[in-house]
Image: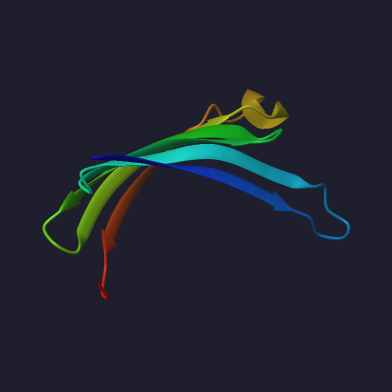
Length: 87
């Protein structure tokens, strides 16, 4: 079973520029997870994870910088290890 979940976030703090996130997360058989998120004027993140055993999840993400700081940072790779305590 494939499930998709849209993501939209708008954040406004006085004295800071507005912040928008737009993306889509999905799962397949509650085993494989992934998604893509665009952060307005900032970057693009692609992430994947697998559920291993009952409470463990392992994943990775790539964060591609699209802002002017890209001259100094082309992106980052992130890793996830998660243990769910409450079912």
